[in-house]
Length: 265
Length: 271
View 1 (tube, rainbow over the protein chains, first blue to last red):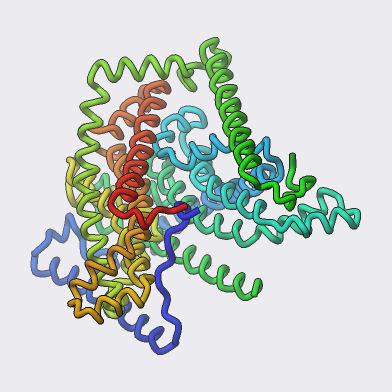
View 2: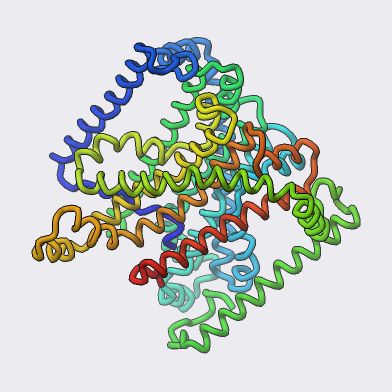
């Protein structure tokens, strides 16, 4: 499974290095912004083409005031929720079916690995042809990109279930459904969540990809729209929002995993 | 044959059972794929579903031959390949160097951490338009996208790999009078290599997505450009060919990297 997750970055233990980490992180970020701003002010870079932090801040204010960017954010979030929700339902369902039944697993496996390793981005033209321009296509791309990691991890989770527990439930007269509800799902949860983490990141990719190439609303669309009009500072507003969403998803994943480890211990 | 019914405690995970299970997997998987291809062929070739929407395997194969023969595939693949190499090799060099520096100096790591995390967690293709505005519609912006997509996993995995190198190796080197540079070259980098290679393999997939997205967004030549051209003319067969070409490229590169790894660092072989 080493291909699925990136190695976790080393994490400091004590709280004194924690503070150092925070302070140095802020210093590094500020230094980056100051150097960028200065380079633009002293004409080392072309501020109109490259843009600079003060212009981006101004663009942020004006786009917030017009409310336009909030509408795009809402569209992106709805598409994200729909696509990722679908991939959770289908991914966990299919994953459990594959985990419980060898024949299903063997039959579906080649297709799952094809989806996992092929550049799905290249399929988007076909999806547009099939589903038309807009919402359905964006949701479909989001779903396709994210559901495979949920499936793969759910299968691994189900395979990791202790067969003794399964036999115990069966011995006391539990039905198949009981086994799934009481043993398999709880035991598979940690791996399903690991799959969800990867899936969330890929779903965000899917939303942006779908909106960039086949939509007329949403943060991804807004990026291409402003770039096409060479309004560089405006491009950064949806871009920064996407970066922040990515960071929030990551933080959420960290928090859930920490909780989970405490729960399992 | 379900996990629910079966009792895998019989010690029967002997190699005979394992081999039987492997061959069952291969047979069932092969059958499923074959059935899928046959169904696709019948549905497409007989126009049960409009064949310009889904094409069919024999048409895809014929299109592959024809695109290869006309040189269309080769010349565009060469452009994409060149962009890929121009971005990927610097990403490996910078990624390993930066990862090593961050592993040696925690302070330096903390300074750059927000930038790394932001690049790692944000959807990298959102940067395509701005990179094109900054670096133009030519090959340079594609190489930059490949670099940006590939460098982060290499940095993170190098860093993690080095911090996980056995302390005793480093102390042994020092005890025999090794300099800091020698410690890095003789103990840290070889010890980190398995982790670095996982990073490089992850980077391959990301870099391909970055490259194709950038070429699709705007470009003059390249595989992504072809995908864009054929999508506007609704040619499913050509798109399937191009998808297959890109997927094959990724698969070959990852396989090649595994071979290379076992050649230069046999100790890092994963089970």
